[in-house]
Length: 499
Image 1 (cartoon, rainbow, N blue to C red):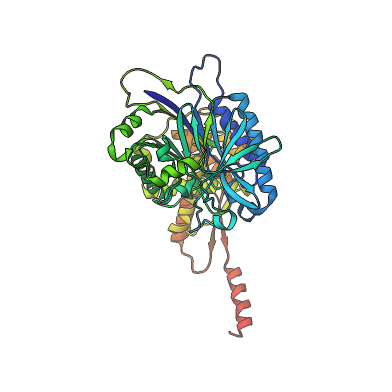
Image 2 (cartoon, helix red, strand yellow):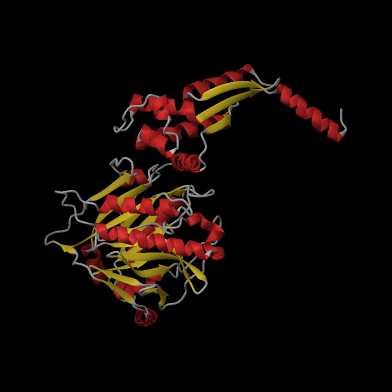
């Protein structure tokens, strides 16, 4: 058996936040790679970050600026220097824009031993719905490589195949895995064993099941390991990223994490037994016949990037179907460890629960990034405004349960409330009655509700609004706005010359 340790990192970034994005990536690397005395865990062979994680995906027209590519590269080199202090044997992939001859490419950079050793550009750009990548990037359709010139050296850029610790790895950046003419087809004849699929795939109801199906079918058809990782949170604008990770092998899900974390990043580590797929590839006749003339021709023109590393871990014996997997959800201020969801739980979130997790995460990130002090809802007593209030209350409950009260307040820019609410150390996660008390305390600070009464309002709706506010412990007020309505009507009537 041949074992390969793979880690994926979903990270919550902010477009153009160079220092913050760099720090969160470095903190994630430290969380994965740092070892304490007596910790005998093997270091990952490979770590995969999401698409455009260095710059953020939502830079929009700023991608055209030379400064964005330059500052992205500067941050990448700082991250590479940081990684060298932690490991000299792990291959790390990070997403950033790369400028070459006045064209900007959406790329994944390979970092090894503290140096950038190769760059893979995206071949198929997302240009439908909310995605406008053809406006910002050029697609890379060449089969050969080019050179990115830096002060001291040249770095290959192209559809590279990486040979790391005797295992061949290719990349398909998000949309690359959604098309028929996908990049990994050219690498099949050259023995690719792991296909990495970093993404910035926006959340939509039911979309996770499509991505899950892509992972399953890709791993089955290619007879490889197929690993996806997505951005996390609402980094800019209207798109929310679920922070999910999926690892499939030969048509089976090995591990998945639905994400939806309120932390800075989620780390996942999976131990892969590559011996199973190697046996399948040598046994299945149709797979051995996939070396077409075109693939052979591309094999001669495409470079293979050899990465020096130790041999993959091997053991003698029968394969163990229950390979160890683990997930850690982390933020710099307080490193909590949580049990990850099981595969069944992850795969079968209802549409309602998907909506709840995505919207609450988006609200949390919007609140902290806009530096607002809370939300105000006109609570009418009806279902619509009550649903909005519920989403805010659930947002705070999820955050407190995962992060604790102090870290939630720090991330929302309101640490002074720790003293006001007389909050003591909360290193233990809030559950049960403690969670309700903590959520009620924060809801009173972050959710303001107003019942705006007119002459047409009824006691039924007023009472319903008051009951909802009391249940959520919002800061509630009742205001009679009939005078404002009368003034508005009078002004419009004078303009329209109506009595």
